[in-house]
Amino acid sequence: MRAQSSAITPTRIAVTTTPATRPTGRTGTLLAALGVVAFSLTFPATAWGLEGFGPWSLVAVRCVLAALIAGGCLVALRVPAPDRRHWPGLAVVAAGVVAGFPLLSTLALRTSTTAHAAVVVGLLPLTTALLSALRVGTRPSRTFWTAALAGAAAVAAFTVQQSGGALTTADLYLFGALLVCAAGYTEGGRLARVMPGWQVIGWALVLCLPLAVPAAAVALAYEPVNLTARSVAGLLWVAAGSQFLGLVVWYRGMAAIGIPKASQLQLAQPLLTLVWSVLLLGEHLTVAAPLTAVAVLVCIAVTQRARG
Figure 1 (cartoon, rainbow, N blue to C red):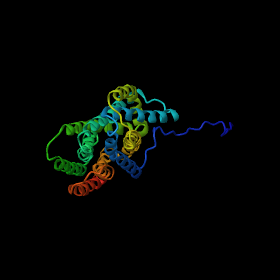
Figure 2 (cartoon, helix red, strand yellow; figure 1 turned 90 degrees about the vertical axis):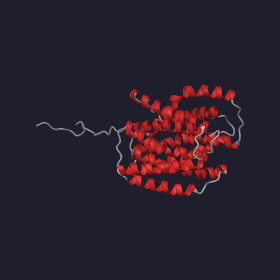
Figure 3 (cartoon, rainbow, N blue to C red; figure 1 turned 120 degrees about the vertical axis):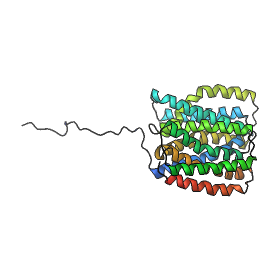
Figure 4 (cartoon, helix red, strand yellow; figure 1 turned 180 degrees about the vertical axis):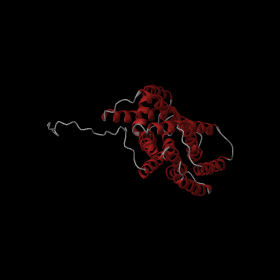
């Protein structure tokens, strides 16, 4: 008879290979909503930043600061570099969210009000859902699409009413920003399913750092700088709040509730930006704003209940 000792008997332990623990549906919705709140402050903060910086300087410096914050976190936590197969997706995030959207929207805000820019970018949720369906293969229900299109139509109607139906150069910049940002959101949401969301945006920022540093040096040399409390506050927010912390919780939320549903939460972003525009910039709202707010909130409720 052969006795077996529990001290020497090997024990098989089940190991979960999921790279990151995903939040629940409610927590994911809350995180995505916090990201929307952070993003809603981006345009007012950019307007503040443009009071002291040129557009190219503001975008380049915000990228450098955000990349240093993200890189510091990655180094402090000893996060290993992503697998080679993830770098193409990170490059899309970097091109769309880190570089493309900030640059195009900042150029637009030189001549556009934050209120007008906010309602144009209100079409971002539908654009993201469309790209998600093509890239990730999601198939939302008819109810979802009906509510999404209704919300986009409400935002589009508000845009036309504000601009008088005439497209400007700023609008073209904003439409370009929509496309590149939607691509970055879609790819980032996909990557956030296999790595923590903060690492997605962190590595995308670090990827841009070798280009952002010389770009900032050149831009600062050619564009005048007039530092004020508001311009510095605006720069710090778009760098730390919008470019890093907001995207951390946003990608985390998208990984939990899915790209289409998370993108529809952004229908509330234009209305939040309008509120900040009044409080921080002294802009005036039109009668159409509260009507659009009600329509958008109804659409959000429908899309959150619709099964994808």
